Image (cartoon, rainbow, N blue to C red; front, side):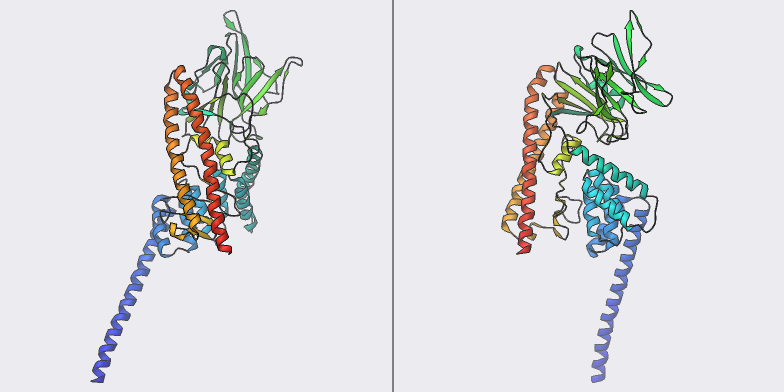
Amino acid sequence: MHIRKFCCTFAVDMRKILLVIVFIIGTYTLWGQTHHSADKLFQAGDYASAQESYRALLKSYPTNALYLYRYARCAQEQGDDTTAIQYFKKAGDRYMLKYFYMGESYMRLWHMDEAIEAYSTYLNSLKEPNEREAHVHLQIATAEKIQRYLRRVEQLQVIDSVEVALDSMLQICALSADAGNLTMDATHNIIYTNQRGDRQLHSTQVDSNYLLVTTHRLLDEWATPDTLPETINFTPEQRSPYLLNDGITLYFAANDTNGLGGLDIYISRYNMATESYTTPENLGMPYNSPANEYFFVLDEIHHIGYLATDRFADTGRVHVYSFLIPEQKQYWRNIPTDSLVAYARLEQFEKANIMTINDSSTVNILEKNTDEIGDFCFIINDSTIYYSLDDFQQQTARDKYNEWSKLDKQIHTEQQSLAQLRKQYAAADEATKKELTPVILQLENNQSQLRIQSEQLLQSIRNIEITAFQE
């Protein structure tokens, strides 16, 4: 009797053990298949599919350094630098190459302090030189240059932004007769003709260089062009000259190693006493960027300026911004870094959702992002992340988050209104444009104030929660 009972118990236990073994083998097999599938997709460059596979793996292994690192790389390859940085941070220091990629993401987001720190950490981790080292040193130098330009970002009231094909960009410039005339040849070379029609400025190729030249009309013919002095032709490439009505102030595009990158807009003035031009000055931000700026025009009769640039534009296309000519220069002072970056890049006129990155001593990134593993992601600091409103320790912080959420919706609603108004402005006649201008400017000013309030609320939420941790 006892033997039979023992045998039955043993048989039941063995079945349980076998089920556990089968489950473990099945789970390991499934994990192996998912891991192999994710790795194969990643190596093949199918980053969207690979990210989904790593997302599934992270639900079961949320601290796995490889999966976190690969998830970050997938996000980065798809242009989501904000998410990439979040997951690089979570991945720890097992894969030091992450600092190289973090530097790349921070550079694209124009957070230069963080970019320099990430690149420097990567360089310090190298045991021997590699093919990335030269690129990293160049990126650090670029970041330091952009930092200098960010100290003087001019305030600019943009009233419209239109994306067009490169060969159609002049069609957006509705210049008055007194502002002169711009035409474009088959090589996209812009030719400026003054209001009297008796003088032209344009770029011409000399050997491998592109130099600015000027010519005058003599009766029915144009005289042989004269090359402008080396003061103006100070780089291998000068383009798109534009002369103000005063006949003295010259704007043009040049590709200079000391500029922000690509073609930048410069200004120079003719000194009649010395019969020479002043040393060209880079217009700085927001007019220039690491992208190409193709032309800069000021119509002083209509009080409207135009800037053509390929920042935020698809290949072969440009954005043409129209803006009010300021009565005097004013620079952004004492505003959060992320707002300064947005103004410097003219980003607020291109993207509905402006990412928020604050001081790295607290952290960093807050956003509601459905591309996360969850629907809600609120980062307090490097080690504390909330995935639900219930994670808030303090009711005050929770209330402020709800307040921020309402404010965020208001910002997005007004952005949509601005986008519609700018479309109306682009197609409007002069009378309607005059009516729309103050409305657009008021909305833009309101957006600036709302963004500052938003950033202050975000920082307040973090401060409340960090204080709760310390008590």
